[in-house]
Every structure is written in structure tokens, then in C-alpha cells.
Image (cartoon, rainbow, N blue to C red):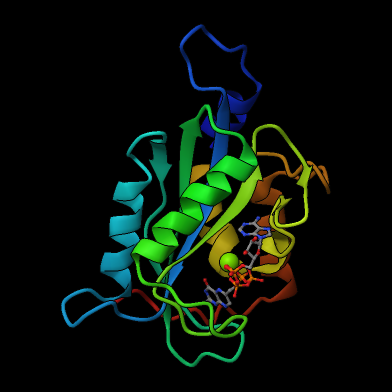
Length: 184
Ligand code: A4P
Ligand code: MG
């Protein structure tokens, strides 16, 4: 972002939100006939701009090839949000939004109407029973790093010490052929 890492590091003005989070959004199953994955991602971006969140940046919505057992193309995006809420509280809100999208946790990496992952937090590292931030897999996924680079290229991963743009370049180098289909 520049923006988010600055938001994370800058001194807090009174009244300014405490924390900045990068949220990964994914969908590869329609909710209904008129509400497909792209529309679900757009609705999630709108929901992430409601209290207690403020949306500070959003990436373009991309179409990406599924990783894992599911066959359907995903719509993916990344949102930067500001809030006073701490990581466990934010996880609670994210899971409420997933539930509202009628997500059923059937199998790991299965088809899903809406998946919201906490990728990065301006507070650095968080490890709990039900939550690990940074998201353990974010460094190895093009569908995360591409959109994340669009909104937060300079945000430094607190684990590797590398900036998002660097992680994205490393991943692209490791996988020189981009097989991600173009957005429809
Ligand atoms: N949890 C721990 N850390 C986090 C975190 N940083 N953010 C816990 C969110 N949740 C976190 O997640 C299982 C549990 O992880 C949660 O209850 C929470 O307490 P889940 O969303 O129910 O399960 P999942 O999403 O099936 O598993 P997982 O391992 O989170 O999968 P991912 O990493 O979300 O991957 N291919 C494409 N192209 N695009 C995608 O978006 N997504 C997945 C799912 C697979 N393939 C994909 C995509
Ligand atoms: Mg998930």
C-alpha cells in the first residue's frame, strides 16, 4: 500500500482507528442465480466498509484457477480495512459475514460462497488456537499476492521481513508461467 504499512506504523492521532488489516476475499460458488462469485466478492467489499470497519483500499477482483480439490474458478480480491477491533474480534466479524453468505464448512478447501482470510495485521504477528496472522499460506499464493500487491506493495511481512512486492516477485519467478485465467 505504502498506505497500510504507513497506517500500521504511523503514530495514532486521537480518534484514528488503531489497526489496519489486509483481508483476502475468495468465492467460487454462486449464492443464487443472480449472485455469482464476482458479485459476492463485491458485496463482501461493501460489508467491509461498514462498522466497525472502514475500507481504505480495495484491489481489483481477479479470476483465479482453483488450488485444491475444487474445480470452479475463483473470484479473489484483497481489502485493506481500518478498525479499533483486535484480531480475534475481527475473526468473529469475518466469520459472521461468511455465515451471512450461507457458507457451510463441508471440507477443507472445498467450494465456498465466501472465504475471508486475515492476511496481515499492522500489529505484526498473532498466534492463537483459532487464528494465525500472517495467514500461514499467503506467501505462496498468486491469487493472494497479486491483489495484495495492488493495495499494499510496501507492507512488510513480519515473519520473513520481506515486502509484499518482493514476495510477489519471488513467487512469480518460481512460477514463471502465469496460468491464472483472465477475468471474465
Ligand atoms: N484461521 C486461522 N488463521 C486464520 C486467518 N489468518 N484468517 C482459522 C482466517 N481464518 C484463520 O478456515 C479454517 C479455520 O482457520 C477458521 O475457522 C479460523 O479459525 P476456513 O476458512 O473454515 O477453512 P478453509 O478456508 O477451507 O481452510 P484454509 O486452510 O483457511 O484455506 P484457505 O487458505 O482459506 O484456502 N484457490 C483459489 N484460486 N482462490 C482461493 O481463494 N482458497 C482456498 C482456501 C483454496 N484454494 C483457492 C482459494
Ligand atoms: Mg479460509
